[in-house]
Image (cartoon, rainbow, N blue to C red; front, side, top):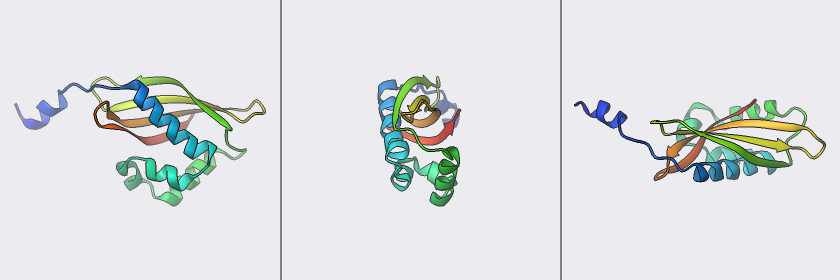
Length: 122
């Protein structure tokens, strides 16, 4: 069997609690503390290779024209079977009733840990 085919058939084991913890840590830095440069450094190197820091700042700022949440919590994790990907859904609130919903995509496994690769509001 060719190596590439064999390696793609290996089982992926996820730790949803660890993925949620990494998403929460990232969200606090990005959204609550609004330290975009630090959050950018926490992202996967592959994600950073696609999006320069200034573009990342512009994108995140564009998602928040009316402010940022003051609190954020994980509401759901969705691991992808046979893939090193976990989607984490988060909900934030600004204290005045405004709700922010996000989907973070994290790449990794239970053994290798997780890094955020994409941030998307919904």
